[in-house]
Structure formats: C-alpha cells, structure tokens
Length: 84
Image 1: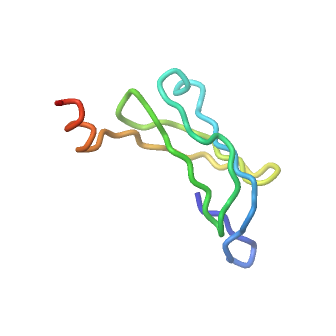
Image 2: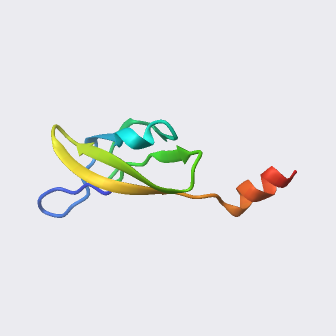
C-alpha cells in the first residue's frame, strides 16, 4: 500500500490496518494486520488456502478507508515443495 502526503510525498510513520472481508476470513490471513508506513509503503503478506481474489479493507491513519483486492496464488516453488 502506498501512502502519500497531500503534496504527493511519501508519508512516513502513518498507521495502516489491513482487514479481510468477512467472507475471506475462514480461508485467508493477512500478516501483520497493523503496521506503519516506511517512507510511504505499508506491507503485509496475504496467506490463503485458496487461489483467487480476496477482498480486504485498508484503513490509513485515523479513518481513511480504501477497498482493495488481494490475489492469492500458488508459486512455482510451492508446487516444487508439494512434490517432494
């Protein structure tokens, strides 16, 4: 998630909270659920036992809400690990 100031500069130290949509909570997790921006970037990892779209809500600061869609996928490394 990229967060900027009204002037377009990267915002540092802004709290960001990630929350999965209710339907996705049984099959996915997001870690960490809460973080702060590091020079305009807030990162979280989406883990899911299903492949496809996962809806999530991102809260920036004290109230800005952004709806996002995360995409859960299986990597080649995951396939290789499953085969061993």
